[in-house]
Length: 302
Image (cartoon, rainbow, N blue to C red; front, side, top):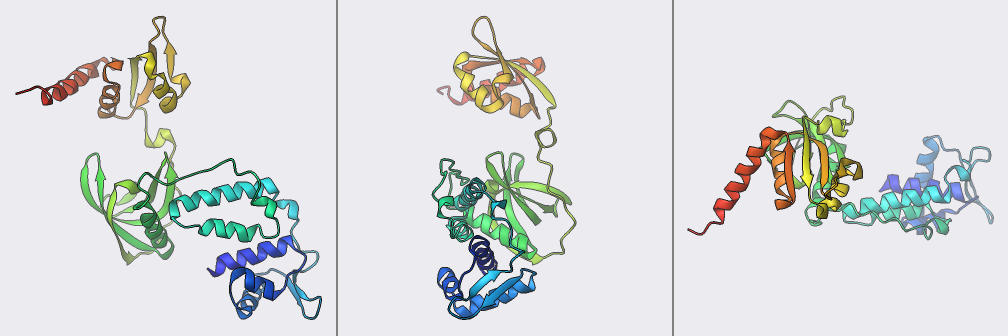
């Protein structure tokens, strides 16, 4: 892509006093004529580049305008590299890593430095997610609607949205867009979308990124207290943190936390099997009993 190449050229010029057009042409696998057009485009964008012909000639940034190379330290570039490689884990390509190699040209220590942080953003289904991300990203950039079948706890529905943002949050990928059915902005989980189709172009609205705070998305409508057996301490620590419970004198764990709806409370308690007892809200204890009774009936021999 032209933009990637121009960013790479600029990164090289920031790190080297001078480079030649043949070097850049070989580096980016394009013709010298293409490099010359890129240099002209950079100059038109306001980057003061100087070209000199002859034996010691080359391309450089005008003296006095060059950005201080310490603006981005090695650790800064390594952090950028880690982030770009994490995007490769969902794109199914090594495009971002290749871009980072261009950005760090002439400073190989940035590539071989701290690689102890490895981020894999891909889901368990690595085959279906990258195409969805690619299609949605293209639809966002080009301003086209998308239609899909959506599977949610309340059932299956057909949706058409104006997509605005791709979001990775709560260990999953989402798209934020204007839903024609709801006539409002909604957040859709990519893993629940099937049959994605690109539709008509739309005129983009003025929109801010969504508020994804826990208080906004998962408001604590019900305060729950539950007695949890000690062998499930790892779950409480992982899901809600060590501050979510207190160890009792008999070794059991007294959990306190907020939930958005009754169904979530019942299913969460049931997921512990006999290792949990709901204490509050007391009115939901009967719902847990009925839930367990329905399961028991499924396994009674006729």
